[in-house]
Image 1 (cartoon, rainbow, N blue to C red):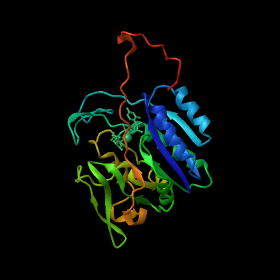
Image 2: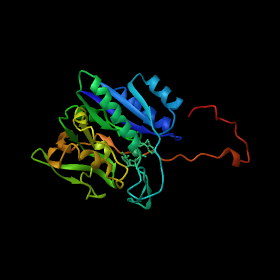
Image 3: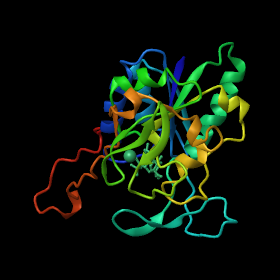
Image 4: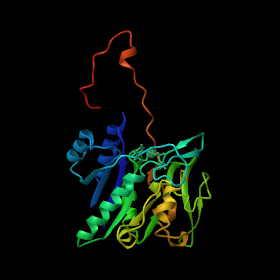
Length: 264
Ligand code: UGA
Ligand code: MN
């Protein structure tokens, strides 16, 4: 089956570094179709060129997240007050509109295809992916799950398996989530999106609930297919790129040569 990797991305200093690392991982994956959705009103040259030069099979889309600080459920685009592991702040779900646009594209694409076999994997642009995770997801019948390293305050968040079935989850952060799994810890049979065209992400859920939001359309805990050696191996890590701090040229006593013309 084709793997459809769905990656929202947004403009920031480390974006090209993150996308370079990810695209060069993906160059080693057979039968892969990368759906990259920019969180922007226009597609950028940076992303367009990176995709073109990658020689990957890809689809380039864009849609801008609308951010307003209201917590009334009547709002279409909302940010909620968030209590994370470390602090409280406004939580504006990231990647929601982008992933939903990708799913709309996918449904249209599959309807025109003779072969609708495939697997959908939601990939953050700054995670670290072993090639082994792609081998695992090709085994998915409906929904496959596996551990994710370095996430939720844990060394590894993972489904617990007994007799080849998921019996629970080892998760410390919001263990009351219907599916306490990170986005990187599951893949869904692509054909199922044609059977459930209503399946999409929602901004009206608190942080950490996006995964449960999409999974609920396709599976109960009992349906989940444990992969990666019965969920004992880590093949993906929820790494996060540190926000770089750079000098502000205007505030420097010694001037530096302008470098604005260089794409970083
Ligand atoms: C965690 C999960 O792993 C994400 O899948 C989930 O979308 C996110 O939380 C959330 O619930 O908001 P985290 O590392 O905190 O991930 O989030 P990011 O990696 O910053 O963002 C997830 C994806 O959305 C990335 O591919 C990023 O490029 C993209 N993004 C982020 C945007 O498109 N726009 C933004 O403003 C921020
Ligand atoms: Mn991330």
